Image (cartoon, rainbow, N blue to C red; front, side):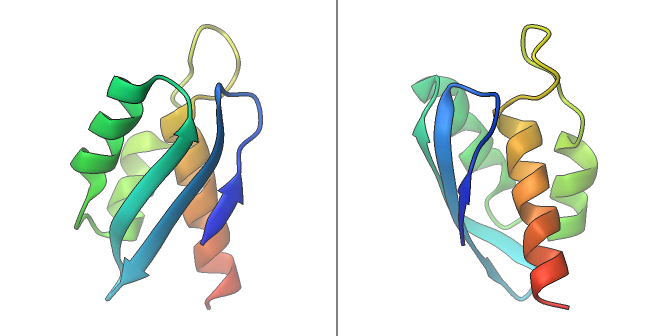
Length: 82
């Protein structure tokens, strides 16, 4: 899935879900070290657990962050693949 982010330095997130596990997360833009770290940490994680851990994380008072945007993207994925 490709997701256009809102309110963050990253512009897009792409990922796959296999057997309800998050895989192949890639951020376009954003803080390279942080986005690579988030991608590595969620690799193989259950979708619902990833959402639970990242939902609502704020970056510099923006009301969102790259991890929060990934959580939103995963929620959208779940809605579209019920």
